[in-house]
Structure formats: structure tokens, C-alpha cells
Amino acid sequence: MAKRLNNQSTIGAVLQQIIQVNKLQPGMDQIDVKEAWRQLMGNGVNTYTKNVVLKGSTLYVELGSAVLREELSHGKSKIVKMINEELGREVVKEVVLR
Image 1 (cartoon, helix red, strand yellow):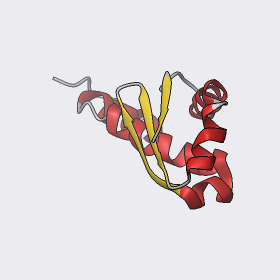
Image 2 (image 1 turned 30 degrees about the horizontal axis):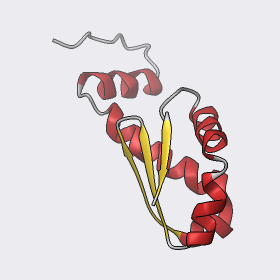
Image 3 (image 1 turned 135 degrees about the horizontal axis):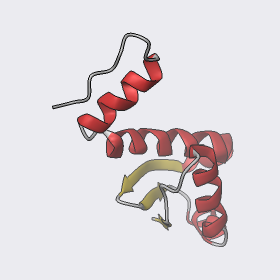
């Protein structure tokens, strides 16, 4: 049974409790990572981004440009670091560019 929250709980605390009880965190991470990618990469990269999918701790990014894929492959560790900093915790451990 879920822990009953008192009437003084904040909306954020209640939502966090709902996410934990219903095991919704992986889905929330998926949404958060897509949004972080969109914000961090900017319009130039987003134009060629076809799909962003988080499976476990691996981020799969499908790109429409081989040149861009090659450029981004040199900075995979920086991409991981930037996304994790944006999210405030370690969600992504590896990036796979397709």
C-alpha cells in the first residue's frame, strides 16, 4: 500500500510519489532525454535528427546526415556529460549514433 501523504505535501512531492509507486520513471526519463537533446543540440542538429530513443542507459540517435553523424561521434562522451548535467542525474551512459 502506498504511503499516505499529509495535506501539507507539495504538488511536486505528490507527483514524485505517483511516479515511484506506478514505476513510471523510465517513461519520464525517455521524455526528459528527448527534450534535453532538443535543447542542447540546437536547430542545426535537430534538423537532421530523425529519432531519439532511450533504452536502459543507452541513448540511440538516428540522424539523416552521415557527415553530422561522423562529427558527433567524436564528442560522444561530451554529449553524455551534457545530457546528464541537464537532467541533474546520470541517466545516459552511452550514445549510439545511427
